[in-house]
Image (cartoon, rainbow, N blue to C red; front, side, top):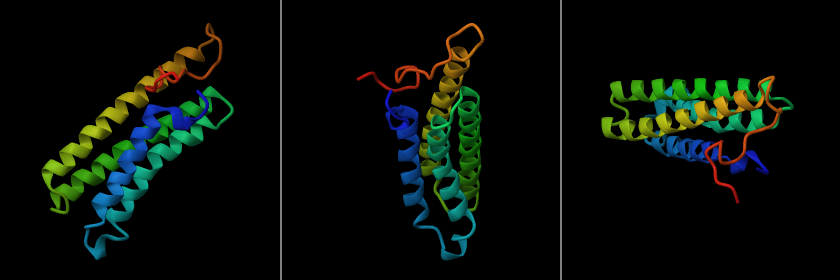
Length: 138
């Protein structure tokens, strides 16, 4: 794997962020500093933390950033559910986006487990392969 950009989880998280930006374009102006900002910030934080963790010098740091990405994902889900409850987003739209967040969450958990296994005292410390991180070998 040459880059975090080869990780399927990063690609999916980027697509989710783009979708969330588009979704919030229709929000009322009074939400620009409220849910619009919060949804966009949380959505952008997921791929950003995956990338930042990948660029760190140790598996421990990488894991911390991946866990932060997981937290941002849950924050995003909560903001989307709130937006639905106050009728800013239709239920079917929120359910579709939440399905994507669930898939990304599963990929993050798999990547975390892979890194934990590869950095255990009995294993050689190395970053996971693209395949283990939800990507494909080239």
